[in-house]
Amino acid sequence: MIARTNEGKIDFKKIIIESGLYLVLFCMLVAIIIKEPTFLSIRNFKNILTQSSVRTIIALGVAGLIVTQGTDLSAGRQVGLSAVISGTLLQSATNVNKAFPALGEFSIFTTILIVVVVGVVIASINGIVVATLNVHPFIATMGTMTIVYGINSLYYDKAGAAPISGFVERYSKFAQGYIQIGSYTIPYLIIYAAIATLIMWTLWNKTKFGKNVFAVGGNPEAAKVSGVNVVLTLMGIYALSGAYYAFGGFLEAGRIGSATNNLGFMYEMDAIAACVIGGVSFYGGVGRISGVITGVIILTIINYGLTYTGVSPYWQYIIKGIIIVVAVAFDSIKYAKKK
Image (cartoon, one colour):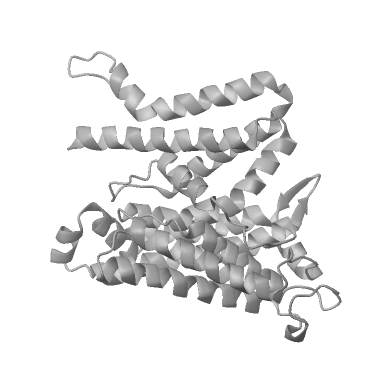
């Protein structure tokens, strides 16, 4: 529906505020297609969806925190820690460069359980610091980001300080495998992302916990007066984010085929950008799962397109940074108008 003024005229200012960022991103996409028409292909579309899968899982973890007026700068480092742990536990016993030969080979399920527990513990600490000590999420997670990277680097050094690779075949298949349907293939990663999305959508929209998360994000004091346990809600959403980061890291190592202590660097920036592009407001209490997925896909298309056309990675960082600033600026304008 086209936005209009009280006089019935088209409100171009409101249209720009509501859709300006999408118009800019659309223009970028058009420019990419004009430069490389071959960008429009089924193969590239499948690659984009596959690359979006792990990003989606990570963004879904961050999204809940943004809804509560928080953020998580440690997301990428938690992904990296999970990836390194997963890699060391699932290296083949026949690998001459196996980091810890005495460990043997763990099962897929056991490894996922271990990294998820580690992720939940770390993220829960973030939640405790934010909810009980009233430390701003930016500061709390910035500290955790540094700590987790230090822990991961120590663990990585203990494992030999070399890229961890040579995984068992079942791990590679779990992350890189696909389902064959006629002449088409559906990567397992897309299926995992779909399941993670369904779980988070259900929690956000069909449970009391989800309602409490939005209540806390909208107005913590009002939520508390209404009987919502703000502390437990914040701890719960942070713990959930940790589980998502951990599973994302587990999949990322398997997808790439190796892991180092630097894996996950700046992943939080993509996740936060995707959330804001998708309409999750930094002012809290506003956001949709469909918006998060849209934001991830849009950002992945831009990233993939820029790489496809040969744009320098350094310029890509600049462009993504600008996108984040512009997205938050539009969010601020919309919030100010509502106030």
